[in-house]
Image 1 (cartoon, rainbow, N blue to C red):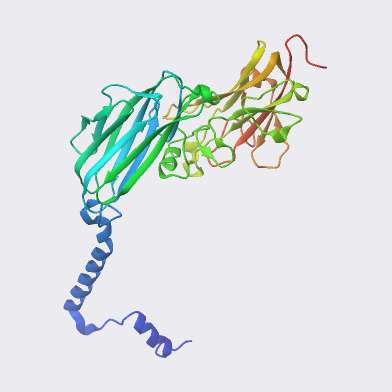
Image 2 (cartoon, rainbow, N blue to C red; image 1 turned 30 degrees about the horizontal axis):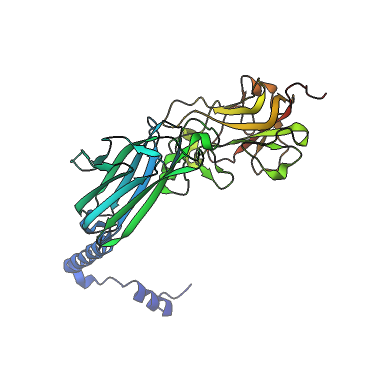
Length: 400
């Protein structure tokens, strides 16, 4: 047994002072006072002036977001059709420990986003409520003489998508925040003209899982194909096509020259429940079904549509999502599907896939992982469904 009174005991007594009975009540009070003083000194930067996490000079933040009414959730990016309205929000915070002076925030909209008259409103978290703010064509803003520590304010405006000259690309909404005591802060949101890149539905914000806001959005329940993922990027555009004989060209939308490579085409749908594993049963999608609709007419541009639905109780995110892919040709074509060609795969998992019935083209089919039971648990890898179709001249038939 080790000798507690030897070298080890003397070293321990230096690290953890031995209580001395002669202190009595006075010593106990002094010890408690020292402990309380230490706690106050440690927590002081986090409570000073009521601004958690910071002390000292103003620390300003700006977040610009956008949504499509009446959809309830703001995001960095949304899609909108020509003539539809969007709502823009700039969230201004002072996270520092002192008041900022001459704070000024402005929102500048792309020329094809037309501000609607008298829609700029200033919302404060305190009792001041909502008040109008300044706006002119393409611009809205507000100035504060003093912006207190811990204060949070939201500026909201409404705009309409008017004729977009290029018919493709993004419409930026840029924000800038300026105060005397700190450098300028900027942020940006974007509106995608829906006709310019795919046709996914419904319009909904794009979630960024690596941001704090994105992680909070994903915890509300099952969310279908609404995030930006490292695997494919924007999950809202989850349906595409490629030529069977040229897979290295990648999945495309639109797919040009559908008659090339003998007209053999694979339609590919990516399905993902974006909710994290921590959501548990609350985040499980139930009754999940996939339907792929093929055009029955002929033409030089044929559009196929994939839709995914779930049966969970209504929530803040859509329970039916869809996307389309266009197959084009220089002369009229028509599409037919290959019977028994539909298969479902687990993304990035080496398996041979499982067959799906041909009813995927009519009423839709249940999908899942171990079983096709319509359950999509949160935190799992995405699913990939592929079907074979044949593009042919409108006056010919599929080869036997």
